[in-house]
Image (cartoon, rainbow, N blue to C red):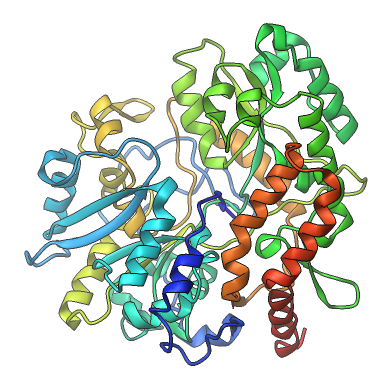
Length: 547
């Protein structure tokens, strides 16, 4: 969905460099469209590997993944021989959010897994908050590693990305198409929709990392503090505002909210598909900026800022440390990705006895059913450098296959938790990471592979899986319908390069740094700055698809 995150714009620098021009016949200044439904022949054939893994404890409503509340008593081996042949190291670039882990042989977790792989993977782990800049520089310089992780939410911002995939990355169709994926059986467990999204230029260009949940944002609250104060979750937008007024006590250093604009837009049923598009009754596309729902959401958010219900550190910055403010009880309501929930609960319950974070139920500010933003697009894509020898590509795919072993296998356990007695301890309820595990394990191998989606047990937070899937299964029925489902859209370069600047202008508007009356002028400027080009592309995509 995630994304899923807001990053500094890099699209303008890539587009301006002009280094990828002429590489793809269909990609133009005005963008391009690919009808993924016509590419079914490229997709790997699904096949269950026949591993003796217990059934899930909680079944998810697709695209929500299934979940387990306990680890299997016995793990199974998924792969019988080392995937590597002892050749030169595989260079990989992946993101990390938080402190960078030790590299190379200074990281015993990497040493242990590389020994199992039979070929070392050398990671260059980059700051996730600056990752877009790194990708843009790599693509512009045509200097990519053997394996490159590109998060799904970055693709929409990278101008002429279809051209980049054609010029710089290996076509994996000859290796994975149809029954050929049988050489890599763990990859045959991925959902067909994830593989469909991994196609560019009518070729299978990457290995997807399937999502385990469709929601980009969740509105979290400190349930422990709500209970202490006798507060109830709001069911209407007026109740949310009154709740904010009741919570906010500046003399006590407490405010109600962080910047929750994405969730406020969702409450007002502002469109979120393809970053904010929907189809009008007459069949023409319109962007969220142009809708009365977005205007109402922006007005409400501006009111929260104007009435002092947002923590002042957030008002004065591009974000502040919203997690820290929430964890310390300085704010009681915040929006974040679903992935923030469990790690925060696990950490903070050891700091603050009784700490309890939970999502607020979704509601509609305008009556009727709520609207949930979300999609089933992969978390990320793994690309293989173009021009490598065939046997090297096959070795790399075997490594990815090993890293993609599902929950319940020894390979999954090692990838997630490292070596028992060093990176985790084995307790009756399952593995628990040690301090070294937290230091050395940073999803390195997760971001060069994929896996069959699952919500795995969390012994430190035993209620998390049922709570998370309870919320998800309740909310997924309100998932917004996507008129462009099955269409991969390469948006116009001018539109992409303007995404972050226009979002910044709207941030200034809702925070009171610009008069709200500027909204119409900002929308007009957006239309002239690429918005109408994008509308033309999206309308043509629907027409060409016969919709």
